[in-house]
Length: 274
Image (cartoon, rainbow, N blue to C red; front, side, top):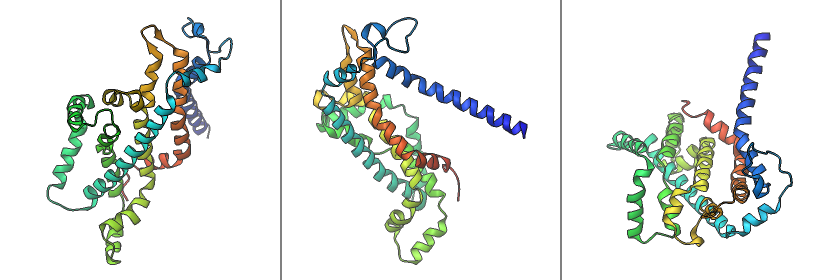
């Protein structure tokens, strides 16, 4: 019993240290967002400001049209996530349950695209969208990100864990593939879907490089790109940048807190066969 208690204590200590390391940057961000400009770059660093400058948040949100940036981010995140949800469910089901010529080869080729760095595709994708006339439009921010090979692969593994007998029983009852997919398969893998949706939403919300490349006007910018407003030739206003960054990450923190149980359950079931 003493050995078990020591093991649990050691694990708890290590987890606590890991959590503290993960929270340290967030604590520094909040601390910096409340400092005066002359305290931001002090060495050694000063964790607690001499005076709490709550007005930094007001100044940060009024330096740029963050209301428009916020609406753009919400729209892009919601539509791209919805698009990926639809495409990955249909594709994952096809690769997991349907039999057609070249299925395994096509799936292998699909997985092979994950080996290609995203940076290599920036120029070809930009040229394609430019010829379509989508630059500086919502189509360029949304449509290229409505499909994900990783999401298809992850959901396929969960579909494979569902017993085939359920499919046989559904067909005996007269259900086709489409009905079986949406009424039986999708509810069963709901935790996995929630996990993938949250990961997609966070990735889309935090995307910086692609929105920076395909947008020219301030009206089309998203929140991460809008943070560049605090960096000028004269330098960076770090206290305002940290205040705006705190505003940017709040929606994702709320989303995670609301769905954390489903996320953990979905990750725990990954790769488990039924």
